[in-house]
Amino acid sequence: MLTPLGWGTAAVSAPLYAAAWWLGYPEPAVLAVAGLAAVAGALLWTLPRPRLDVRREIAPTKVERGEPAVAVLHVANEGRAVRGLSARDAAGATDVAVDIPRLRSGGGRTVTYRLPTARRGEIPVGPLRLVRADPLGLARRVREYGAPRVLLVRPRTVPLPVLPSGRAHHLEGPTSDRSPAGTATFHALREYVVGDEMRHIHWKSSARTGTLMVRRLVDASLPTTTVVLEARAAAWPEPDDFELAVDAAASAAAGAASAGFPVRVLTGAGPLAGTRGGPGDLEVLLDALTSVGTDEGARSAVDAVRGVRAGGSLVVVTGGDAEMGRIAAVRSRFDRVVVLRVRPAGPVPAPPGVHLIDVADLDGLAESWRRLGSAR
Image (cartoon, rainbow, N blue to C red; front, side, top):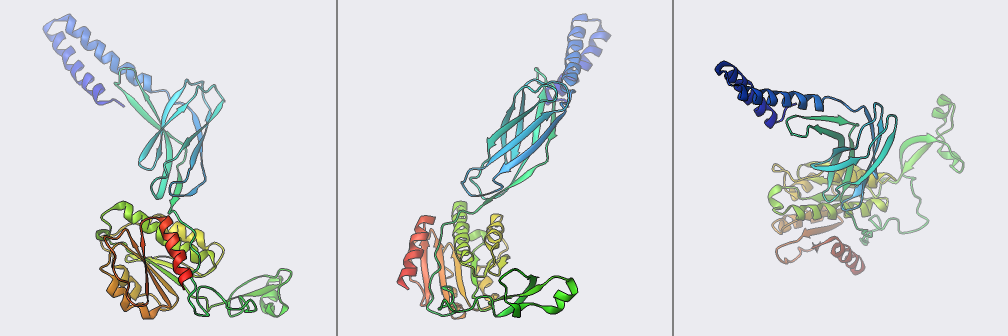
């Protein structure tokens, strides 16, 4: 298509030729013909369409914020030989320059480049945009190749050990190695494997399916760790503070999930994720926190807590101290309450029964969390 310069050249050349012909001046007519010829030549210049097959890979597809990730483009030429091409590949809001060397007919190239991972979120990568323009800049044609992919830039986390609570049913788990695991409540049926107890076989389902099926039993007494993230936009005037808050919430949730405990994560805008203590819980929680953002209409963190079933641990991630009194009001509903204040303006006294940690960075969070555990 024509660029603004191309449209301007055509718009001036056409009436100039008509006026020159009408008035009998050959010089302006020649100039007008040259302008129209340049526009026509520019359109012809950008008309050829390279026949390229572009496949895109992202390695890895999920990274923590700040970790390296690369895009790999496999470009194959299915038409005539083409000279070196300059293209742009979209990576979120960023355009990445991609230089593709000369491709003979039937040939292929592999091009690799780094992806931006400084910001958390779902980063769409692609399609590859090939821009072909004439030397005078009168015409420009953009063609897209390859299906886009998505890179998940997840929150950063630090390992947080499970804090003892002093209660037999809390996050340190069973108090005795002889305590049976997974013998409390029926959860689902699965196929028999060598070593399963015969008393757990479900004979009716086995007869119906022709395969030995056993009951999968779970310990329903495991306490749930509730992580509540303050999501009101007014509470986070600095975007970097909210990013640190998400990292802190993800670390707290990941610590409990890695120990095999149920976790639920929510904001004032609603629940984000809930897990039961399985092997894939960590992935579910981190994926859910990948796209969380502030919300003008969200309730406060404490208002979100009031709708949560009592029991287990409560971790509240907030940015100020206005909620401390209200957090103390819900303290009795949980076995342990920890408040993470992200980059607060100043110190405040912790309400009775509430553990308070001021978070300036993730390393400081890990150290304070360990000290809290040793102090118990």
